[in-house]
Image 1 (cartoon, rainbow, N blue to C red):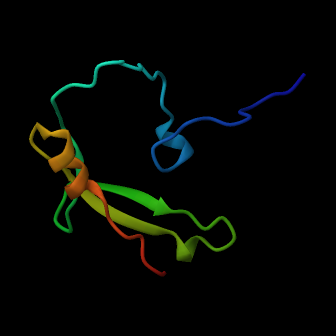
Image 2 (tube, rainbow, N blue to C red):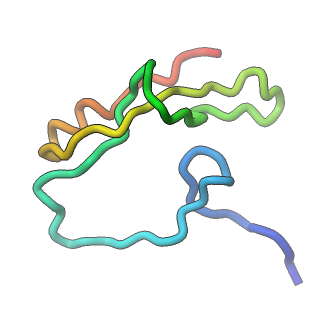
Length: 83
């Protein structure tokens, strides 16, 4: 018997595991995105170094307003950078 997790979808770290995914064949016209924002309330690890945690990179985000998918996608991308 195997105990513990064997893998899973998460948002950043395993403490942010996703419970459920719903696939919608017809995407909505607008979505709400997490947007990179240096003054944002939310901090997420975007690069985790399991060998040396000092090299783990965190970025700050804010929750944007609902907007058309293509506009929101363009604002949501960011470069991770080098630790």
